[in-house]
Length: 216
Image (cartoon, rainbow, N blue to C red):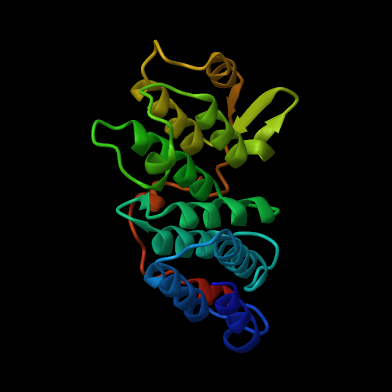
């Protein structure tokens, strides 16, 4: 696998990923690969995240077009397909200086899907079995919302707050981490009428928005 990564760096993508076709080709290679070493995982995650954030305009942030591309490419029926693809999503969000609320809500929704009566998705597969909220879940949530904390308050859009509310409703109240109540109590919902506030578009695939449109 190390030799394969070296070949990709030298010949297939010497300057990194340059288009959505490159990104899809790398994802296809990942799906076809039986052995997924730590080196491959690191290469895949870093290459895709860097391309999304810095390889297309606007550089350094994730706009609506990029968010749509990520959600459409990495998920099926709203659930992220694999652990590596979930890590691509999270790492891209960490690299970006700005992330739209619909993308962070989509990432949070992976936890909701794991608490449904018929749980599904990559987050569910890698999550410790529990009907409540665990420390593992809180670490995941804070990884998504780390930039929303301001002076002890969690500044969220209505959509982000709604997803957390649904998670709270699904979780077994007898099995809740003590910090969960503190986090929920700290939520302040922001009203941003000049923005779309990330309607519920992330729940429905929109084929009109491709990452290459941002590059154009």
